[in-house]
Image (tube, rainbow, N blue to C red; front, side, top):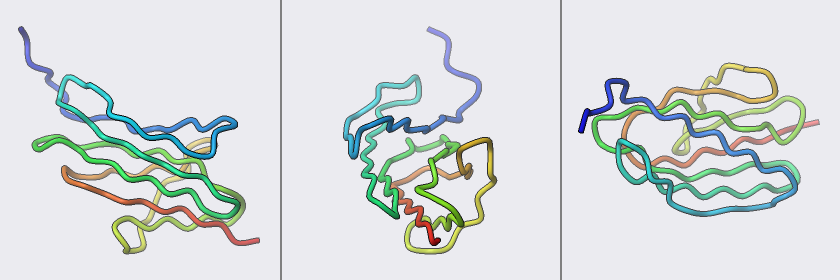
Length: 101
C-alpha cells in the first residue's frame, strides 16, 4: 500500500442548519476527532491533527468582524470566500471564532 505523499488535512465544517456535531473522521493519516458548536456570535471547534501531519482549518465566521483564537491565543486567519483559513500543526487544538457587530 502506498503511503500518502502530502501530509496535510483539510478540516472544513459545513454546518448548514446544524448547531453542533461531533465525530471521528478516518483519513489516510489516521483518525481525526472533530467536534464543533455554533452559537449566535461564536463558532467553536475542537480537533486533533495526527503526528507528522499538518492541517488547513477553514471555519465559517458567525457574523461580521470575525476574530479567531487558537488554543486560547489570537490567530491571524486568511479570509477565503465565506470561510476563515488557518494552517495548524499536529496536536490537539481548540479554535474559537467570535463576531462583533
